Image (cartoon, rainbow, N blue to C red):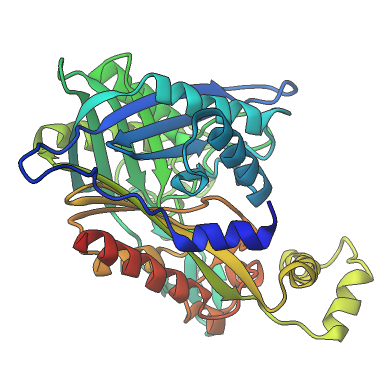
Length: 456
């Protein structure tokens, strides 16, 4: 299938809506199936396996699937292959499948037959589908686990991750999103919990990527929830928009921060010993803290009337520009002793040159919306999206429970900054492939799709 035809099909959007029933008939029940497959590379050490977790949805004639992979990114090519295989094997519309990456930084490689394994997981999830009761809710993470990593400095510049207790830090220039979105799928007959979908905006970069493969903090979230809810639970974690959010509070230590790699635990806001080497919150700490929040919210989740529908839209986002002189400079090669941002800028120009040869001045980016219930929707976006953009989608959404998941279906956008960040600069902007305003175009498309689905 040509790229133009594929883009046209996706631009039409998922055309399935509520199951067709007579006025007197009851709506068809929502069926959900799960499957988990190992995608860990054969070579290397493993702390915990890298997994791909598939959620399959069916209501009446509408079918959809959401897959979360323990990978740093998922490419457009892999997504196309997974969608094609799934469509061929089980007949699910390709545009009704979202393939997302959790963004664990240890997942920079996957098994050689990655696409084949993930497609098989989608097929397996379909075979296990059964009627479910949908319960959803949005709760606030009481203990602060996330921090905006872009800071205004005393010299007026903006820097990302400027260093622990840096005296030149004035304040963070952006917000965080403390909300934890939860969807729980219970067996309609037994009431047992089959699967959960948790959504939270925090980078998965708490495990040393050179040590061993790991799913990062969602692994500990899953293990804690299985102990609390039941060993059969499939815990799926959808990473929220956290392109400018991570787990490192540069301003002060706090409960859970470790000194000298975990040898000493600090009490809240205790002064740091002069010989200490503080590190950020660890994966286990974050995962268990999120699990505590989710567990505490389970009794408060509200039943939502299932109402499955899917829509998608292709946004033609403008690619960033560069001059012929910039390209010549980048092609000359960069010496090892240049700054980190200089190397990133050179790679960006070379990457943009390839994208412009392929697409021209704009690049197709896909925005998807899954309506699970009358009050519950899931939005998927490509790239590492700034938290402000996710918050804007939630603010504009007509659904009470809106979960926004990044790093979906492609990664050729790289970072997706908010408009004001382009004037501030720093790493995320230098590493973005989009021109200023591309992120806001994605927000507009997402909110438009949400409103369409609400009005059906």
